[in-house]
Length: 430
Ligand code: NAD
Image 1: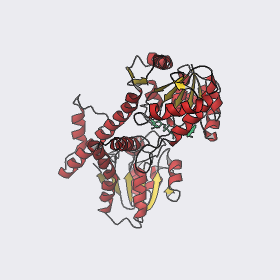
Image 2: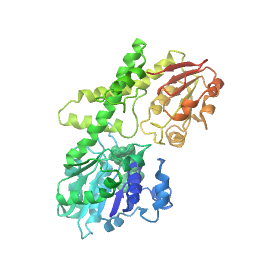
Image 3: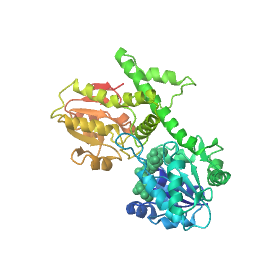
Image 4: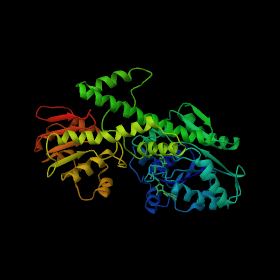
């Protein structure tokens, strides 16, 4: 099929390259000329395992990029993979979605055949029906169900394993309200269903599909927060939280995934999605107490980590290495990374910060241009008074005599990844 994808970030680029891999012809539409040029040059604009190979293989062939919305006219369906960030009060900011819906509507006004518009972005329930559909109607002069259809297909890929996640999904959720929309979606996803060995395909309503994504993320974020709450209790009693969590994870009703305790969740999804659904629930007059508690526990973990450091010395004038800047391993994404909170707090306390990450340094440099950045964990540790481990990159597990170059060998481990050794003042957050 001929597909267009508006937005070429972590989701848009990944799904475009994967749809090309599945045999579709795909055009990415983005307002960022650098992103478009990079894709057309065969280079993935983001770091994601396996993505560079797919982009290189299909660019200029089944995959191309443009800033021109008119290229949508030659496609059968458009996925909206645009950012849905938070407003200051945590509620969802639909500004980009609204602007793109209007541009898409103006474009579709010039299309004779019917078109399918699929919301891929994470949006609060009723957004596709109440906000996106009407804007396209207004700009195109067409009606939903007569000239174009709307649908919602939430994305569950994780950064760091995005390509594998997309190509081997646990489930595919198709939200639509007309048979024609379901049929087009089914056609688009048929090669994926076949390749992935028939994963469950959930046919549901548009608003249900929107809510499934929030419910999914709310559950996972809350699971991690519960693990952190339990691990914090364990620490009070001198109980090994890893043994406790590993053991409860063996219960098939609980499961071990997303049960690791530590510095908490960051990234572009859990923080904004929990905030958005909490705000949306409140706007309806419902107070989501459990979800708010999950957020509160998460917000408390970086402060607990800093307290462990403050117990050892006054931070003023100390050199502190922050190992790991990405919000999790396998990605260069630093959005809502716990490392940002640590670095800001260290700077506020007068500490001298050196950061290290295998791939996320340049992104963090934009956020904190004035701190030091090291080219290796060893360089970051050299002459540091303390190290805070913020991301569980595998290479941190292999650190050993690199710690010997520290001034004071204090290591506070937010991810339980460092191998304990003689001579270290090591403490795990949980
Ligand atoms: P992103 O910020 O990485 O990418 C968004 C892209 O949209 C950018 O390239 C930007 O230039 C482009 N853009 C902005 N305005 C535009 C416009 N008017 N027209 C065309 N392009 C425009 O965002 P992302 O991480 O890919 O997230 C997209 C959506 O997917 C969000 O709703 C997010 O919640 C959801 N989601 C993200 C993930 C993830 O792991 N990142 C996973 C599942 C769902």
